[in-house]
Length: 444
Image (cartoon, rainbow, N blue to C red; front, side, top):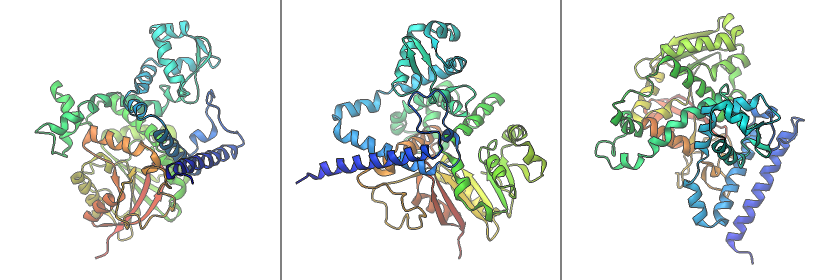
């Protein structure tokens, strides 16, 4: 008789096999085939806006592979691997020195000697960095001491929005390094205030207590470009294909940034009237971005730019949809309630609020928490871990904690925050990395 633990392993192997085949089928449907680990160019699916089926397959694949390894590998190895991961340090070297940019001019590969001269770094140390990353398919050694880009390393170019997002992550380790200290410090330990985040704890000895959002023009430009990359990483554009935008006439993009979502939304749905609302300094960058990337949309007069501090002011009133992408997770509960109450005051009787965020799954949630879910496959199949074994939502949760004392939330927590603002959850859309939650005005 097969042991229960062995049955779990067999079930995981079945999930790995079936999900890998589903992913392969999605690639093959493009007529470009399955990409290779050392491909030097992007695959058409890499930047497609609708890859939901592929990403659902990868979610299962990643979760099952990780759980299988956790079961079968010696625990000493697994625990050590949790902490001894220096890929981020190596990638930081690549981004700061623009190695991917140099190699982009030499698709056939470049020798370490020439590369070292081009970036003014030690040849031996560059080799060590690149060989760590080649183990993960990021760069390839085409011949001894000759390296070239892969589709992963191309993401690290200075002109790539994803590379820009990764670049701004370089300060996070120092905030994580003081996490325990903030949890025992008398002033910080019990506080969920924005000014008691690990970032503030780290910088207080440097007399730097400015808000994260206080930036000069150069830093603001880098940050906004990185948010475009963040949208690509989390595939926010999937919402363009799965929410019924044809039934919407007007949208307010609350905290719109420079248009990561509103630009593609305006292009795909030419009937929509869109209001971008942001801080005045960011709106200046936004207008420049729209003029560069969507000038034809600006000409037809259906886009407007209206300054907004959503903690102190109401958005424009009476629009069909108020869209908040990665806004609520930046803030503790108190500020989140203020933001949503301000939105609620601006809504008309038939308006909707769309909150687009990472959503955490938790063990032992009440059974009615996800009763309104539109996607039957949102919960991971047995025996995969919660969140399908993916660490992405929890990584984002830690980033929000480090920077702002913000957090990713469960669906139950979003329902509670919505209710405190007079809103009721009416629909959800499982978009793999994120969830779209539709709220309407609660009826008395």
